[in-house]
Image (cartoon, rainbow, N blue to C red; front, side):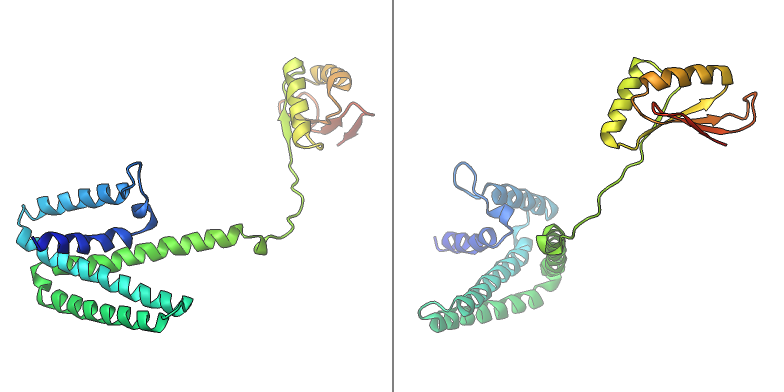
Length: 239
């Protein structure tokens, strides 16, 4: 009859002191995440130890007194920080509790180390390191998103090139979209036949939407390599 209340009291700090996700209450106002995750881990431990509950007692004892010690030490820190009425007396009570449970934890961990307590002793630092790493990551992200480090960024400029092989309605829509991204957008055309290039330049003057056309002469072109730039405004050429 006495064992059940002790186990309930011992298990409560594990739920209350676990990370926030484990402390979330579900639709039935219970720690749904904590129950499911801890229940699953407990099932894995039972299967791993082949149902030998005696071998699990050192693990449970160390975990319980670790949670007791952390809870009591956290209360001492809280009383010192808030300094509520009679805070010194409350801090002394929780301090004695933290010291007592801490000593018991060390005794159990030392005497039961080879009987399974080593698993908890090794696992706790790893979990603490993982939690500290996650906390450090959140702090770094929060610092990067803070307005205190916000500086005026220079205006972004984009270089938009539209590769064209001919001029038709689809190309016109592509040119208008390119202009919406960058007013300095340009179209690039690779010249294979100078005669066709002249015809496209004539059409470009009317339908090019004001986008400059850069003509690159292909090595297979029948004319000497050159570069020409055409727009709907006066045509200019560079060689």
